[in-house]
Length: 339
Image (tube, rainbow, N blue to C red; front, side, top):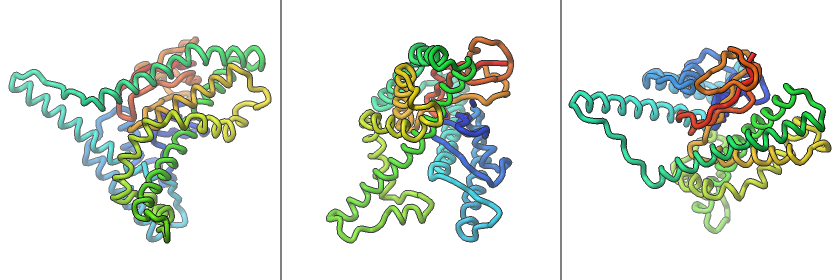
């Protein structure tokens, strides 16, 4: 957020189905666990019963406790702090959804017209920012994507499917880089803020980073306060990070995508625009979501238009769908090369 922001609906460099932009689950303790079932249903747009979601969280936290106290040799769990937080956010979202529906039903039974709460100024600004980013990202397909595609086809002599795959692969890798970097950046900002408060003279400093890592990356109460302010600050200053993020992408990912010595102007411009906008979308709270389908999946016409060839099944995702956030509405449909 998968050729399928993200079952993140997304898949990055593997054939595994992953979840949307902002969530990267890497669990080896069983594809049939309650956690995976709840997340897959929630990010597919289904309403998840809060009791089922709560049971999934209890199972997940119980597993982590077992691993922490008596790590089994036959199971390995690679996790991020965000995974537990995301599960809690899903429950909050579902509970609010149930409350909203209940209130609407009650209003209708009383003969009242349901009223939508008016957004605050901050919410209006956030919505506008998301639509502006979605507009800019979608315009890349009409401009830079087509120019880069033509350049690969004409000068690199690549075949049509190879051009489409490579340009989409740039997006998948950009998502991967931005999600990981945004998470690490937030940890660094929060740790530095908290350390500066606890140790204003910076003498005999407590090693917060070590403490943070030992406790599975869970923020303390003080760090949670710092995070609230850090999120707003980073959203306003995210543009300043763009050159460094582009440089990191070029250094860490470019060689696996295209020979740097053969990189021409239009492909470079495409990469720079993609990385910039994905970074800005990722640093929002919550992050926006990019979604693409995996090969051989049945085409989802609600989220994708057909590009070039008609068919019922996915050959390649040409361009991802753009959502407000993980559980938000779709802003732009993506493009699918069907088979």
